[in-house]
Image 1: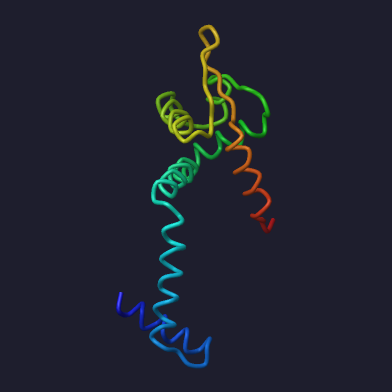
Image 2: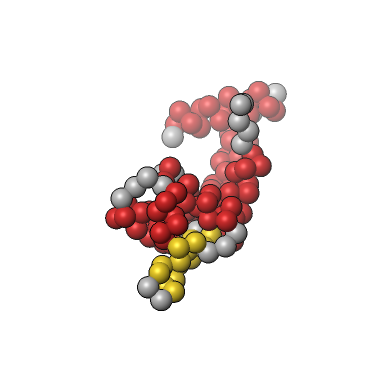
Length: 133
């Protein structure tokens, strides 16, 4: 922490021309307020969602469900990804737990649909990432 405070003091010296201890304390208070505003529970929930998308199989499933704009049967999703039935079940369960996918039984078939959260995340990613092809 002392090293971080020293770096902050050097930064403030550069920004302000000269830096006093009060300047460092004020900035540390401002930064603490920003950090407290993040909320650890909110950050943990957001990390759970991002973690669910951090696997190629799960991300592919979400992208397919978002692109489909309709419900898909588990058998249709199984044809899209090259994983075992158990791997598919685990991936879909993780996506449901993260609130990215909804599931329900329709007779003997299990159906899945992307949630609004999934649509929003995929839309943001598509708009912010470019490929050089």
